[in-house]
Image 1 (tube, rainbow, N blue to C red):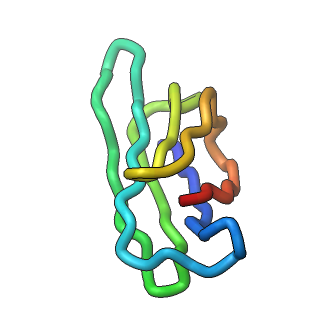
Image 2 (tube, one colour; image 1 turned 90 degrees about the vertical axis):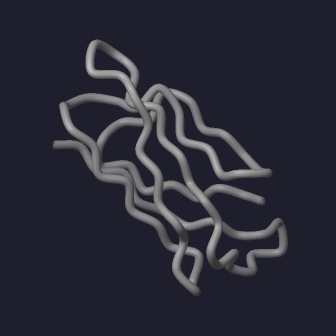
Length: 77
């Protein structure tokens, strides 16, 4: 089981609530996992398997490639 957590913020550091964050699981199992940010901009992605997500992105914003389980990200929108 993998987990990636983090926050979505504006360039000025303000939280972005209700943003959609998407992770590409890839590999043999394939597929995507999604999460909505809370009012503080926080999100958690839980996925099956071990290892990395091919990428994590926020709709209309930044994308982070090759994300390891256990990562704590800050994505900008």
